Length: 274
Length: 168
Image (spheres, rainbow over the protein chains, first blue to last red):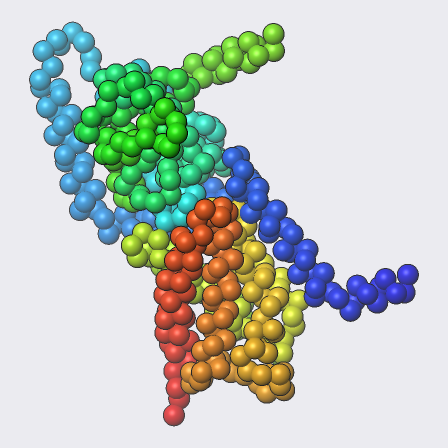
């Protein structure tokens, strides 16, 4: 017994080191699996609060560009309103197909990372505003990511610039599906994989979200085809997609609530159980 | 003794704040970012409590992870750097480092520079290996480590000189 105590006292630093190393490695490994640790994320009170404060300052400095964007969006909406011939139809508040305005939560990006292989975005609305895990996040130009963790007031989003992210997408004119991933290289481009070679694709074609996922409604813009190449020895194309969004510069975003989601998941679960 | 503790706490908070507010937003060419917050570990007094250093480094890294959404990579790199710091001291200053009081924030001698260099390289390579977590990115890891280290070292030396201007 004495010897055990002596051993512990003599090697206290080493044991402490190994213990802390174990904890931090466990956290690291956990963070590389899809659903991450709830504790160490920027959706908590401390880091969320600090990021919000920083964002207030940044926002003030960027008022001019934000204003310009709002003016542009205003002009676009106005032109939509004036060019509408059928006045009996009330135009949707947002131009997204299949989504009612009531299903959208407007939120703001308070922290955005894009320099690592696994990037996350922090938003300033959380469970209090009805944000839940696996909701889709978009803005006026295209998709941004999928909600990962939420706390009371903040939430983190798996950006499309994250090598773990996989989003169902299709070519707008031909309905061929593929999955959208990122190879970790450039912030302006993502990759659409597993598109069958039967599909006729040309440079400049538009890529939109597909209807197979329950996260995003069908037909939300993603980007245009930039380069097409064939993965060695498979019969699938890999397409380099140039994003409409500048992922390094994000302001206000929309979070999509999907009402049918739970119904669909329950249905699929039932199917599996039988 | 007490004032040393206060100085350390002050450094811990200030370096973290500067890192989060300023340096986390710096991205040269999209992937080169400096991490001068590890100056806390580098500047920790030589003869002070070692377990204190290891625990505070862990907390430092964990706080960084919280802000970067990165799981535990900063914590791991910081704990490893804190534990191997005495060995780096031996490597840079020779065996008798414990008997002389090394003040890093005086003039920059080759020994002091090599100490900062080795510490920063060790921290960054662990950080970027754990961040990528795949061997197919080995060139990417080495490139990031190299450029970010240069960046971190330059900023660290500037900060050291700003904290302690030569009084003469």
